[in-house]
Length: 88
Image 1 (tube, rainbow, N blue to C red):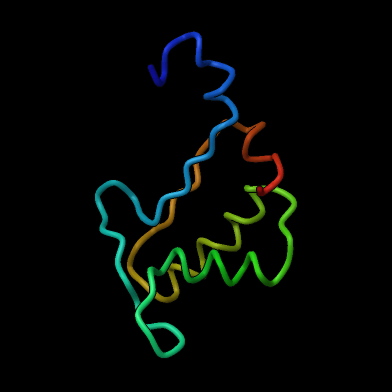
Image 2 (cartoon, rainbow, N blue to C red):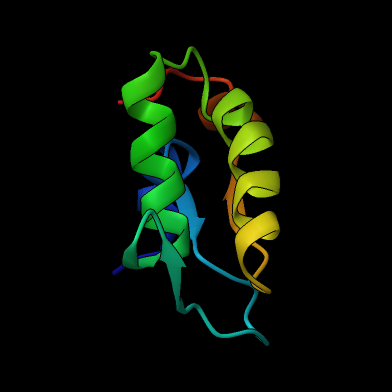
């Protein structure tokens, strides 16, 4: 069962990347001449531009990109050790 005490070590290494806050709606945006999921479009673009050392660094750049092109607020959550770990 997710969240049980025996999963504590596994839970500490998990990252949550979501397109928006719980009270918002993730949506498509008109980007580069077509509709794309705002988070997905920018995440793929950033990952193609350069390798990211940590999730925290990736999230710091991803959030303002998405905010410029949509009303949603991306979320990146996890334990400090996971956020400071390598992206993929």
